[in-house]
Length: 156
Image (cartoon, rainbow, N blue to C red):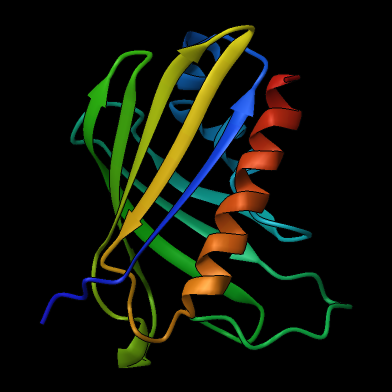
């Protein structure tokens, strides 16, 4: 049964849409800006093109007292694919966590829109079909931190 649970997070980034769009299609860039907070990103595979697949792990720091990861005590591993790419405007990817816990199962769709704004870009990230095991507040906060990282990475 598909979940209707969703979050939406927006942030202004002082950079043009084309620079932000490119950061979604580069494996090294994604490994840098995608992990929220103090997590680290490891890219296992990455095809930055429409219908291209990717696999990543988000690793919690050793010293952090955090809830266990979805895949292991210290990691969230996920696989995904680029569903739709509209250059400099929209990135849609679908992801699945690698977890034995059924509360994390299901495919999450993340749709990111890039809207030109005075002096930069309004970036909006919508997550649909969030599994029941993920608190909506946590997903929202993770997306906020990710967009902050993206802005820092881009320099905006």
